[in-house]
Length: 256
Image 1 (cartoon, one colour):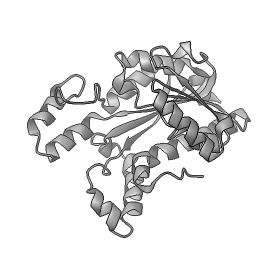
Image 2 (spheres, one colour):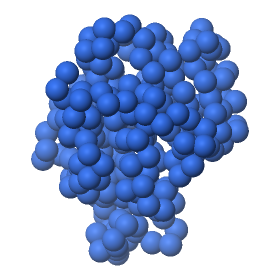
Image 3 (cartoon, helix red, strand yellow):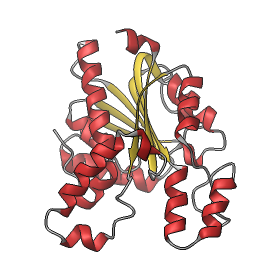
Image 4 (cartoon, one colour):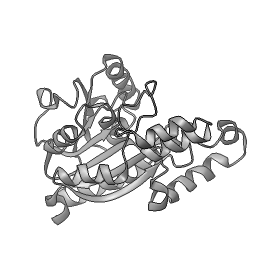
């Protein structure tokens, strides 16, 4: 079952959704329960929460934006899963002010680490929300993709600045506070006590290919999606991906 997202948007989410869906399916088999408890931190309008609910899971979305939570409610209702999606206002720093500690089979931390003051604390909170057997889906901005994009746009000084900056920022106008390498993200996940089960590069080519080509060339979108899926698994392409996805497992999940 795939998420019926808009075709263009699927370039940004297809790889992550396939990995996440497979991880959820494996947890279902391991637990013997058809419905899992899923926490989506920073889940916004439900890009992943609603498809997960369609699979039969109970999803709690934590997001600081009331507008995003309103859009989530509408999206869940339109998909017929309003009874399995709950939105609460909050953020990663005060996560346990609004959700239960140790109460979830899976935690999604997508697009969150870039914006927290202390990424290690952000990961630590996400992991603390997991049950003893659980999985973490971590998606964060990749350093290499930003450097490549600035260089291809002719902004060579900004590309160099991103390389030299400890947070991977290309300048004062950069809207992203933190970017990461694979090594940094996997170290954060392992430092929080999880085993790294998989690493994928996301949007390796999608942000570099002219949109007009994808939208007008027959078969281009499907071919690009297939290319992204293959490249996502190859370590050689992780260093130039716009985003990096790390799947972490608790020791209990690894042993089950």
